[in-house]
Image 1: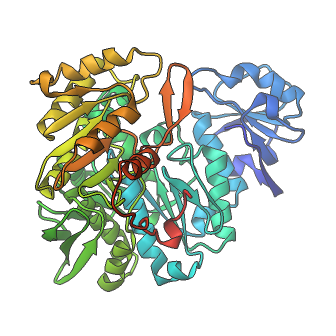
Image 2: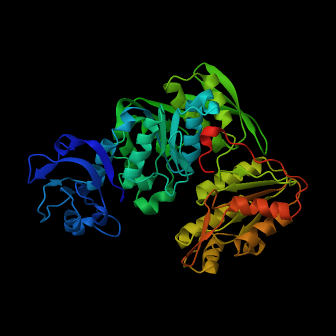
Image 3: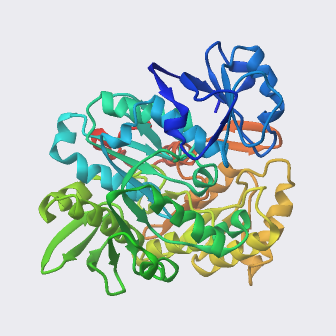
Length: 512
């Protein structure tokens, strides 16, 4: 939030924020803005933000002393420069940043994807379809903002957040326009919506994958959580539309409340787009995609009902935007994997190995049930719980892990400053037969044990981290990757042959 946005031409704050009240001047014109008092430069418009840990209203005088020509505030301050009083300075900041970037989403078709689960994969599937065959020729058609990384069509970068803060998001979108992207696909987290990071963004499509109760501790009630997700609808352009999951009851119940055009998708419920599973194996599945009177087979290397559901959501967006079923199917099939999303590791071993970022009971259950359906032997699961989770949620997680695996290995997953054995004790509170559980706090040792004890026909599922590349132990942030460590251990344990890694398509190669 400390980046300064700049623009050659001045912008009128009265025109940009017509409902705001301006004191000390008839209008405020600006060419740059900043939300950090210490980083303010002469000529900046300073936006005071009420954060979780501090309130930069208290430091507005520092911004003025550093050269701020005006301030945007939520309460009147004793400063000597003009000030603009707004109801929510975070919203104002987002609108200001987007205006300084030239309102890039007004120049592209922009799709926002939100929900409890499936946001990342759905975003990648949409990008693959909209990129079309041109993606294989490295043409810049689609920009992506997601938890696995960001792409402006030319530059690609790992992201520390699912959705960047206001100035960073505006800069990514500006560069997408400069690089001739026709579409932007934005994965939108609940945290980003609560922080108003999407303020000023105009959407052509709103996709809601599902609503789960796993996020209630952060939002206090399902009503608050649902209200937060629906707030994104207010940012739809006049011709914008919504895509909803008919299989998710909490999402489907929202349909009568929508004033915007909407399309539904589902595997088990009546919907505008549906699917029929034809066959499923450990490394691929085939389903029939049905849209009205048309159907087409789709073969994907990612498996599970949840992946089929994500494919339907992406297909619904593409259909409304004018793509035919044949190009949609090709786009879905181009996504061979998404890092850490039930990613299959092929190192020549005689059993299957998957890495997934599931941490909640719902997500863990979905991942393990998917693997169970394609496994002739045992499902061996390696998992832990983060130090920031509470004991009740850990017990629920332990119950889900036991119910959906034949051998469970409990280990560390970002214990932080909490005692690792206490975390595992909380997990065991939800397990009916704790004597059958292997408790191995060291994560590398735990993964090695699971791989060493796997037999032909078994599946090893390593849950919790997915593509995250760190481990929080005490106050230390240690470099760690389940994917890299598991591959190393497989080779060390003498996998008979090494198959080449799965090749990602060019426009999805955004994390290196």
